[in-house]
Image (cartoon, rainbow, N blue to C red; front, side, top):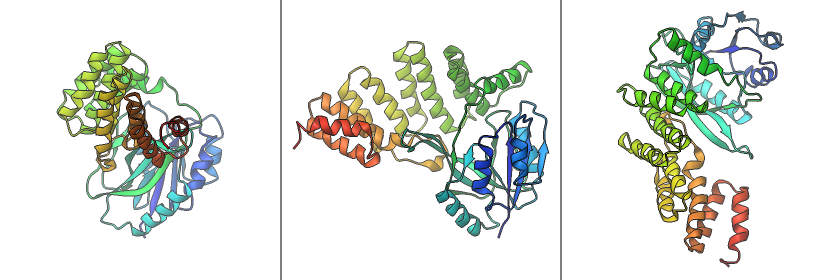
Length: 357
């Protein structure tokens, strides 16, 4: 059986590290933990699981720190986790099946990464990440922030899932600070870094600056398709923030120049018309969302609700406002298939009781 080194970088993670390591300790063959300057009990907790604990001076470069961890791995494959990640019991069982079946011909394993959840614990944001990488093939982390491995060779997709369970927020200024230090130092951001720099500017409500960066990114031929689609969405959000709704709609529609519609974008367009009480137009776009095929293997960010619950519950609203109560009630029941405990579904059932037997 192939062996796996868990390679992690940590700093001040005493509240989550034990949970993470306990969920994976018996699944991997080696733990490499690189600490970038903890002042709490992080290193003490890590030492309970491994003696392969190393210090690495933080230099505002996530890729450098992750490469330092990977460089110390001795197993056939390297696997990375963040300290606030965890493998659920179901994921642990799937991981065992994956490890048993993992043949030497596999170079990279892409695993699902669940990072957003609603109040009931349902996944609202998910995507695939390169999670297990064959050691000593020269695949390296790149990018000071929002780091990534450019994969090569035989890549497979696994249903095994890593769940991101953050207990405390990260430094909200960190990523933007790193990007702007790189720019001040004269570094040219590659297309991927431009995309994420634009997102950081958007998060900080620097909408005009974000739009300029996104436009530069969209002009790059090398930009990744899925990032271009997401950039269109964020351009729209920036235009909304600047009070220009017409430009926002244009940005959403621009995405169709790059590829087939995604449900996320159709729902955004539907929301645009819903917010303006244009029920028929909104219903059209929510119906288009239901027709979109969900393809997690494209690698882009996925909003699971956009492929079922959201368009159904919003079609319920639109059709009800159009006086089509029986159709509206039917879509409410379709929404219930995706989220049986949804408060909106329960409220709508009570409302439709006077219209539908």
